[in-house]
Length: 434
Ligand SMILES: [Zn+2]
Image (cartoon, rainbow, N blue to C red):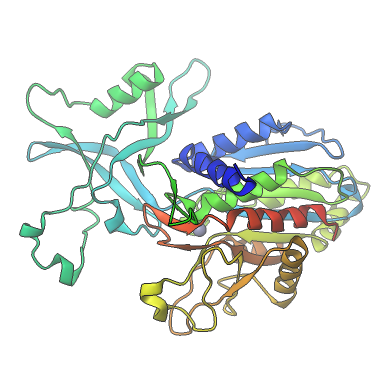
């Protein structure tokens, strides 16, 4: 198998293991540990060694990992790649189960900008985090059902005659709750979900203190197209960028005067304002702690920050052949055309002249083509962690990401030949001393 195929298969495995941000962080932790990284706790004192490899998490859904630079105590700077662990989805409400017209259904909330119609008629299941009673303090456990337990069936066309002309309009409260079971007398539905979770976690239903469960599509990602040039999968936005950043850090060799950092945040899809989102002090706190051992820590920290750089990696919109008019004619990124630099002068993206020129030169050195995106002037622009982190840290930032179609659909589409080039560009970043 070629290196390109290997890396894409690796990406699909990573996404498949990560139905929720909790699982994505767990998978990232596992891979980092296998590659010699040590876990730190925010509440403990840190004893860090030069060139040492570490990681830490917040809320089990955001993660920062780094390789300590050999000159971090001498203001040499941080090289950071940021991405987000969350994807739009449907989340179970706390009291989710109810009977209606002979069906057992589960109430759901819409998390982020879900392309709602794509969640209908899919083989859905549940995954997430459960908090259990324990002797000393409550314990957090991951749970995942593999079998397709749930379905949001569309109304038959005979009962919705003009759906093809008017489009499928879904009321979020009334039309999204999935069907979980039937409520006939033989079928004991009281606390059925709790019983199933307890069975999975080998505990009693009464031990469950809280559950944070999300729906996910049980169909694994695949490589498609006439020549295997596409990826069809859930959560490419933004686990593909997480995987590229993680792979780059894991494969980073040798010593570097600068500290190499990856920061993966939860809650990007809902605005990043949380204790573990990009709007939180998580990254700033960690970076400051890295300079605490120097002679004049406060000054070292500010000077190190002034020498630092942030690549905000999030997926970008490729041109859709059936809707080409949705793009600015001079900015039409194509699949497998290489990473995209994202621009918006209203600061929905943090890219500016210096940071874009720098990223472009990085790609050139890595032998990777590069594309540019700016939204049509008469359309509103999306945003990401770039501007939020730039405002939080005050360091130079570029917003980049691989091109894709069907963003925020339950099953998205990207180019299979774009993943390795993005990693190559990131590797150039982590190998070059700026
Ligand atoms: Zn995203």
